[in-house]
Image 1 (spheres, rainbow, N blue to C red):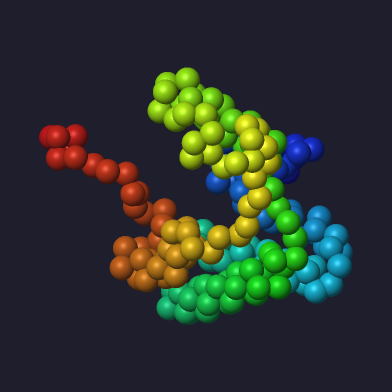
Image 2: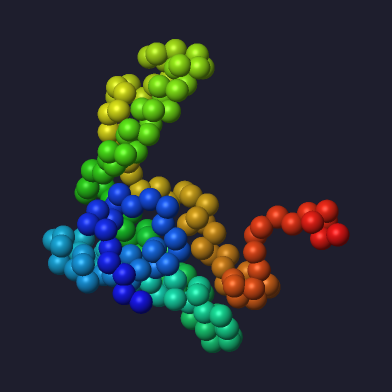
Length: 173
């Protein structure tokens, strides 16, 4: 199904999995030639590897061959992420979106109102509502867990066969 995107994709909230998939697939032609080289090639390679990895992850049936290819794809994806961090991230200064800055200011105001934080203490020093500089962080669980998907599929089957939802014995009776 073809769905229309918002004119401000970075401002979207409460995205479903299909929304992330659609954004990933459509971003390659949109971003092509948007940045100068070598950034363009690095970003497009990363997006392609992400789309390929996602396609392998969505398969409902795997063979030894697809799992071998999925494992190789995961390796290439890791290399693409490291190349992106090394060659692109340091060249661009990124900041919070306005809604993120506003949310941080609201949280800080709520803490001050509750008396949990005195004004001027433990603050970022940027002032209330100021945009905060952000950098790409590869030390997250999401990226770390990518390497475990193939092994998990070998052990438990495809990801549509199980859930991480906690089930108590009381619910089973």
